[in-house]
Amino acid sequence: MAANVDNKLSLFEKALAFVAFHTLFIPPILLVLTILIAPSIVKAQVILLYIAFAFWSGCTLRSELKYGNPWRRFSEDFPPFRTMRSYLGLGFGPLPKELIEAEKKEGAQFVFATFPHGCGSEFRILMEGIMHTVLPDVHRRLRTLAASVLFRIPFVREIALWTGCVDASRKTAERNLDEGHSLVVLPGGEAEQLMTEYGREKVYLKSRKGFIKLAMRKRCPVVAVYVFGSSDMFCTSRFLYGPRYWLMKNLGVCIPLCRGLIGSPMCPLPKKTTVVFSAPIHFHMADHSPSDKELDVAHDKFMRELIGLFNKHKASCGYAEREIEIR
Image 1: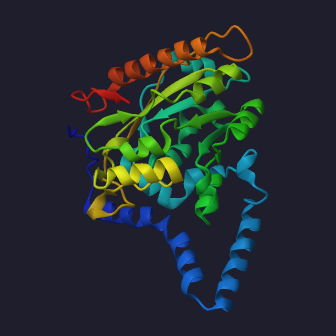
Image 2: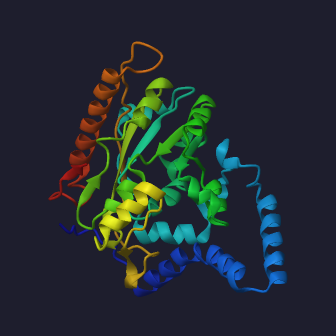
Image 3: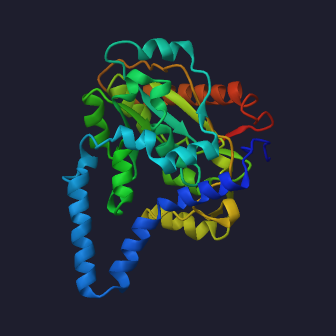
């Protein structure tokens, strides 16, 4: 069901945003085309230039497997990001007082479990640049778990690292929590990305328990996060869904079929995007690691909290007629 949450913009603002979103894809596309079709001497020069750029940027030595390489000024002030945030009307709903109070405590850290993924999770890199406005203390030690494949694509890798991303492996997640960092996780992952459907609020969660187990083992509270507008950023298609699901499941290749502004698969529709947070969720555990029963109880508790969060804010965010669908 469509919601009336279009961000009202002029033609000029839409054109500017269209250019901004595509700007992120131009460097890696040009690099790949150069490697494929350019003469050998040109290929060698381009590769050497990229290596030099990587060293200059500080994004070497497998930073994604450690603590990342966040560049706050880039996240906050990069002109295309500012344009994209304005285009989506990206903002935050009111924070619960429990989260505000908990964030002020010394050594506070959280696992921010964020839904839904959407076709591209554009909100993730854009949210990084304004998180300090609502969670200033936690933001200084905030990292986001991102798919390993992103760190294998030139320039996409740098953008991911500069916007606070680290590899989504368990070892890296544990290392960052041990260091006192908070984590943003998108538990639905590629499965949720592929099942995104315009006009419906689909969440892939019933079999996703790893983030709960991680938080319990590290004695870290979980905060449920819902991004209203994420599901409607692109019109989606279920064409060849079966083969695409097989590719995702067996080869880790996710191919969402989507179209945004002027049919572009890169520039989303101008949907107002609002991020809302739950209060910190604490789980009981008798030992150093949760039993299967304790994990199931904690997972059920989180699902109830996520549903409650959605229902609490859906009317004020323009989605009063929708229901969250947990798969």
